[in-house]
Length: 165
Image (cartoon, rainbow, N blue to C red; front, side, top):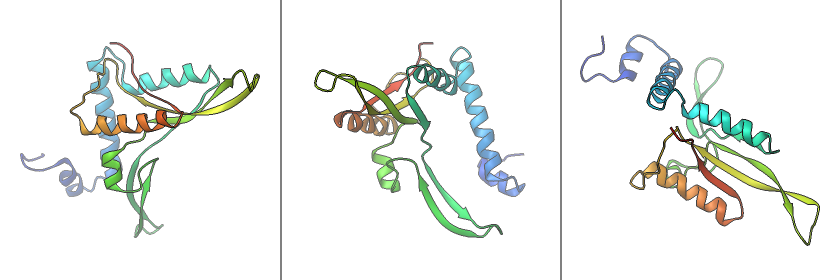
């Protein structure tokens, strides 16, 4: 039983349930809730459809997981700390600017001076569940928007991507 003031993490430690298992459970429950709230489609579904569509246009996109965690050696001893994902050099930076779910490159035909020559344009796409609407009061979404504006200001293609409910 989880007691009223007991967090899920505390309960999991009490029963020796690995943090990875709790994270997987959370992700599954979150995706299930998203699907139910949005007519059976989740943010993951939107992302898969977007990836298929963009791949057909010759784009190459990769998942940009952002986070941080402890490293351990083969004996389970902590051996360091790592931050990963673009624009995530520090927790302070990550609060201010958040890189998108997918980054990559798309072919772009240059005209007229360089007719027939393709160049690669940096792409950054932040996927959202169907029916999502930008919330200007959300620090998280404002930080994601800041990243998109930075990419656009440097000539890249950067958008929030969702589908209608």
